[in-house]
Length: 174
Picture 1 (cartoon, rainbow, N blue to C red):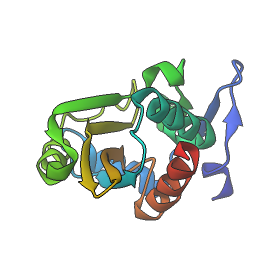
Picture 2: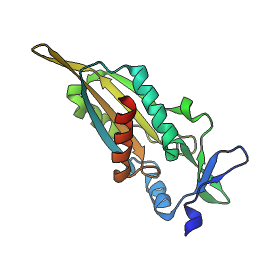
Picture 3: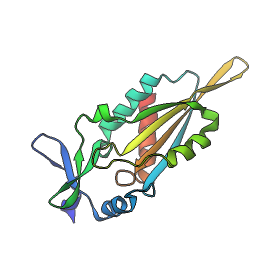
């Protein structure tokens, strides 16, 4: 049904649309559990240190580029509906995990997978953690290693979308 997937604008010029059947399914199975979450890791190596403010700016650009990252789930006429969050940039859930370095990302990944459930009515429906940076010195060259851990609610992101999100983020970081 075409009308289930088109975006409309509310009076306040916010994006809004009804959830499709698959999205309603993932919303239902996620009630009180983490089973409908998509988790991924982005391992970065570079010759310069990653500035936390630069990383946050790139994530905000991602938020602007992909409307579903700005959504929350509300009820409209007894139907779940995507609605754009108020002040979406201020709601970016970006954390720094100083207690885990990028070499030991697997430990942090397990912690992220078992993290707190999303508040679908408030949003955001995704979060990002930046691990403590490490570096390797080989001869004259220093390689900085950074790890970003992502968790998305399945209603806004699937495995295929992750590739596009990561590609854009690396582009924005460049």
